[in-house]
Image (tube, rainbow, N blue to C red; front, side, top):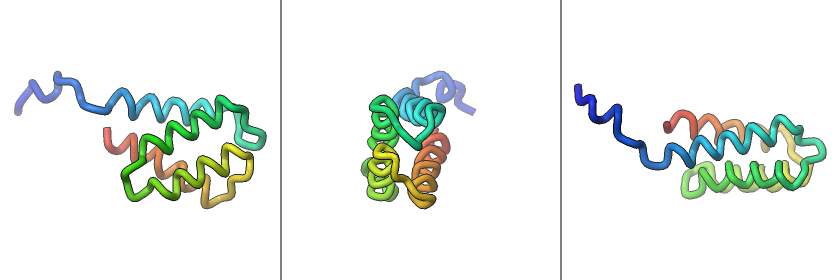
Length: 89
């Protein structure tokens, strides 16, 4: 086993975890009447999955949730993006 692989920095790790943290902060505040800071957290999550197959759905979901109009499918897309980011790291 190559121990150096465990000690080297992982590209994108900090950014992925920051996006997940921002999304978690948005959830803690609730999404019924989101504030601008919560919308930023949702946008950070959408930005983190840009360029992936989830990008379009998550961008739409982040916009709807940021406006306080998210449905079940939107929340599912956001949860999938969070799971994908954590699974990638």
